[in-house]
Image 1 (cartoon, rainbow, N blue to C red):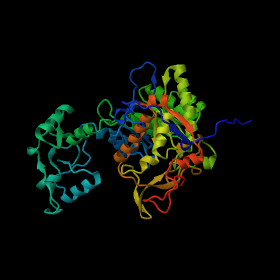
Image 2 (image 1 turned 180 degrees about the horizontal axis):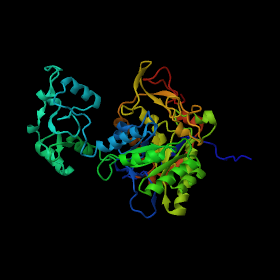
Image 3 (image 1 turned 90 degrees about the vertical axis):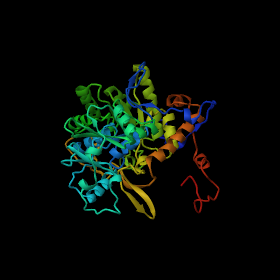
Image 4 (image 1 turned 45 degrees about the vertical axis):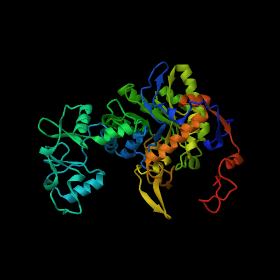
Length: 506
């Protein structure tokens, strides 16, 4: 006979937090959102890898590329570069993130002296920046002949056919530094000479890299930046349980800080085999997350297999139709609560703490607070990040409103069959488990995340908590009725900015 759960399958919208005592020193500015990303043993002072904020972006082609990874790491979160692409392309994205804030940046837009102003303008539009080294062969590591910045030309007074050699700042007028210059020394030179960028050259005057003033300024204005030990942005990468033996070495070589198996259902031998392969070839040096699961059994299986963190959620994503097509899944709140209990029990038994990530079912900002209060260490978000300038999808006008394209990995558009693979020789997507859609365009990631995180910190203060573990310990949650949900929003009024009538039941 089938097993029946006594507890209904509940969503985040069915819960509210009950406020606790807020002491005078419990203010949003004092709240720390640091949270563990990978497992650690009881008694260890430092977790091997932490997030500055408890938010990671989903392993989706519509969400997580290198541009998103840089933007999110700047704010203290982490992106998992999508794996539904060639191994070479995914590794290249990872490498671009690691190079972006290495301090010493390999130039991605380079000129030769015989190129034209028109080509300079085209490169600026393509890459989004105006500083371009001029090398003998036009390569990133050719002999340095000069540099072009916005100060070297005026489109209103020059012909597009003018040669770079005629308007560049020549080598003899440049301040440069040798290849053995440290990042601190490079920044000192930049400040001393009031430079925007400093070329680094080798003994033969070949360009090695560039150091930018803005990178130093950026770090000062973004104290939560997620950086590795070499001051480079941290980035994750998605893998599958089919080609991991070829994909993982390339991603590790490119510099990926952490991997995650991208699968709709993680309670499988395929994930266990993938983790075992990583341990056999890399030991504990390579960190790998697994999932997704929705109950204690699934958590225990992946914990015993050696996962560094475990994702929770099946069918709760806004573009996911797994529950409709297969009748498989569980309400995200119920799944998070049960897996969190299993995580705590595992910790008591083994002394090993395995972080859990709530993935899916988050519609409103306050759902993030609920997920953390229920025991999640961090959340994975797709729709949330897909709305921003930094996501890789196109911005389009739909019925007079700007939208961003957003599609599921199980949609006909993505056809990410590896994510839904159940083994065997058959390859390909037999039926859809995701949709192709739009989400309202929301502007920049930085501005939106700032509001979201302020809401989270304010909520934690309402519960008398200054850290996420303290929040989980002090949180009090209550189920709400359907009428209570209506009561919780604007109701029985005519709103000035919406017509003709607004209700939070819509």
